[in-house]
Amino acid sequence: MRLWIGLYLPRLPLEVFCPSWSEDSCSVVLEQEGVLAVSPRAHAAGVRVGMRRGGALLMAPDAQLHERAPQREQEAAHAVAMALLRYTPLVAQAEEATLLIDIGASLRLFGGIRKLCALVRESMRALGFTAVLSCAPTARGAWLLARSGGGRCLGIERMTRRLAPLPSSLPPPARPFLNWFEGMGCLTLADLRRLPRPGLQRRCGRALLDMLDEAHGEAPEMYEWLEAPPTFSARLELFDRIEHADALLHGAQRLLQQMVGWLCARQFAVERVKLLLEHERGKVARPPTAIDIVLAEPVWRDDHLLRLLKERLAKTELAAPVIGLCLEAAQVRPMLPPTDSLFPEPGGSKEDRERLFELLVARLGPDNVLKASPQADYRPELANAWVPVHDKLRPADVSARLPPQSLPRPAWLLPKPIALLMRDHRPFYMSPLRMVSNAERIEAGWWSEGQTRDYFIAEGGDHAHYWVFRERLGSKDGDAAPRWYLHGLFG
Image 1 (cartoon, rainbow, N blue to C red):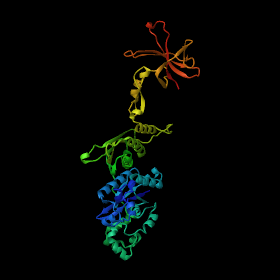
Image 2 (cartoon, rainbow, N blue to C red; image 1 turned 90 degrees about the vertical axis):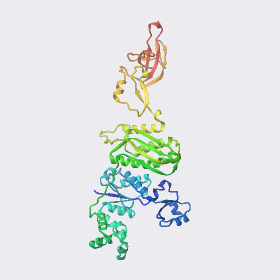
Image 3 (cartoon, helix red, strand yellow; image 1 turned 180 degrees about the vertical axis):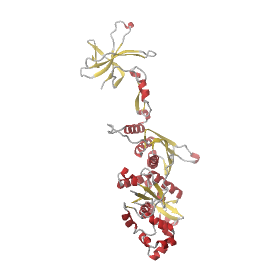
Image 4 (tube, one colour; image 1 turned 135 degrees about the horizontal axis):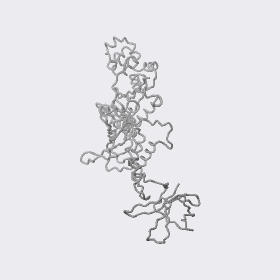
């Protein structure tokens, strides 16, 4: 099934200068001294599209005037197209700030046309752009519906009925001939299709007929698809000087949307992300502040990355105001296929645990989230070290460090052994302790402070198990009684 979504960006010239999170600003976009677009506040003040510069300043003296920037509009449309690559690799830029995406092969993956359209709208809101969305079985049909206010048609017959009453001025090839069409009473697309084709081609050229045929599914459509670059680096110029790091999250979210689209198009997962906070230029120029995020497991979704950036930005203190953001995918790897295990892992998958660790590291710092690292030492106090949770430990190295064990070891080791009392020649800890295992002799550390101990598993009167040891006495100790110590607790 061939199905297209058309996205028309009617407020692109305005939103390039005043993003949606700052609509309270009074902004006006000019083109050749005429008003092209106005913000809601400027519209409330009486500024209208088509006014001259002087009239706009008369109605809103505090208005911020911007000259239209076609290059920046093209860059913004390209950024939106890059973000839409997460839904399909077939994305094309069409005329007049319109994007066309072929989503026929993506319907089942995203749960149908309704859910897919809702996801596209959510992506547009996250990017900060206003879009008119349409859906049709042809790309030109979706373009015409989007330019006329939107709508959804899943079949050719219904689309033909929806296109028939649209104005004849809608197709760009027809606009130079509007006076001729109006003189004949040809006011809709249905009227255009009823005109004799040979005469219409001689008068208006082949482009108008081709566009009408493509829109109604009577001619093949050819488009140049957007190609994702081999590496990702996106920049966003902020609308104002930002002095608080947490206010940068919305801009970072826009860049993350583009990166996720790029990752999906290239079938990559990102392992390391770098966000550069650009400061003032000129005489007071400063190098960008870098926020480097290293992921334990590669990801290609934006929700987890957004949480990590939120935590890092909340802890970042800006040395100077920020005027721009730059996001780079510093390290990527091919996207791994989903697990083929029949039953899910209890308590969540490995990826879920790694994401939790990454969130804790972003919030608490790498020195406060640690994991155990076995050491090659027989002494229990020195048989383990704590390292950052993201340090890579190979299983072969870990197994080589583990000493051979003849008896179980406890899960809880006391920071310092506790000397035990002796009652009736038995060690006492809340109750007399009874040895329930053979001795495990540990003799190590002769190069520093040597240890000579016999370890036992002991059972108390409440049937709890303890790890105790008895210091071995040398000949110089004579007839001294052996000393017992509590060193660990079993679960």
